[in-house]
Amino acid sequence: MIHREILGDGSIRLAKDGCSFVFRRLRPGAMLVTIAGRDTGGLGDAPLDELQAEIARYPPIELYVDARDATFAAESVSDAWTRFFSANRDRLRRVRILVGTPFVQLVVDVAKLFSRTGELIQVESDARRFEEAVASAAPAPARAPSQPGLPRAAEPERAAEPARAAEPAVGPGAAPAGVAGATASAAIRREVLADGAVQLANDRCSYTFRRLRPGVMLIAIAGHDGGEFGELPLDEVRKEIARFGPAALFVDVRAVTVAAPGVSDAWTAFFAANRATISRVRILVGSKLLQLVVALSKEASRTGDMIQVDDDPERFQAALAREAAPERPAPRGPSRP
Image (cartoon, rainbow, N blue to C red; front, side):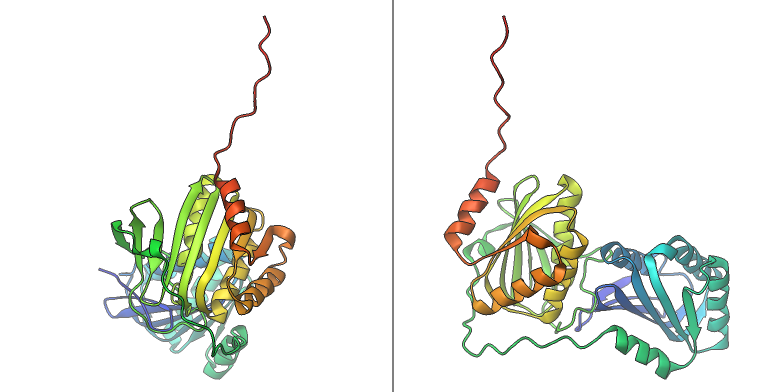
């Protein structure tokens, strides 16, 4: 059985039979994969599924693979990576692989040769140079200003609705992958509430997703989001877009007390990447600080007038009611005799 866990910094770890892969997102579009032990093929396609999910989110990606602690790779493993590189050459910006033994270097060189990817893949044995490249791909995020007077928000009443079903947050790309600012927390829970809404929650923060009608979604966020949710909230929105096409999003962040810089970065990248599949976004803020954070994200996403920032709850609710109203068919003209 493959063991998949979320580490304290938000990375994803896969392990089985003395081999482990750790996936850490350096920033949207750049991922570090650390491999250790003997890979005899017991993990199957699970490691490549994690990468495929990241590529689907932020193509093309930069891939950094630290294989200095890998001691063996079976032929089937080498073949799978060769096929992966060949099939994704247009969605990989660059690949840099650090090796620690002559055997692993030979395996990687063979995969590079037969993938026919030219100079896309760079193989090296200099750990310091590799680490410098990784550091340059993950610039330290600017810290949010301190908030000494910001009160802690109470959880909204709807977060306490009785659950109809519960399931763990699992699946390729479902867990956070190294969002900056993430800290250890209780496990993330995914629940389907009595009214059909979906809620993601841990002990400090909750996201509640309500479909008002196909193609219109209300997202209510409450609490302290330190980045532990990673791509989970965005994956819920992606599923809605996949079902019903271009979506209108209403996002209520009045009850958010803190959002880590990496959270803002992830939403900014999401809006920029999905401008063609999101018809409009309306975000209700409750503090000047959040209004500034959202405004900066809007500007950085370069989505023009797609995003509207609102600080008036009544105006937000009125717009929400208009969008939630079922579409009526156009009146038919008088029938001819």
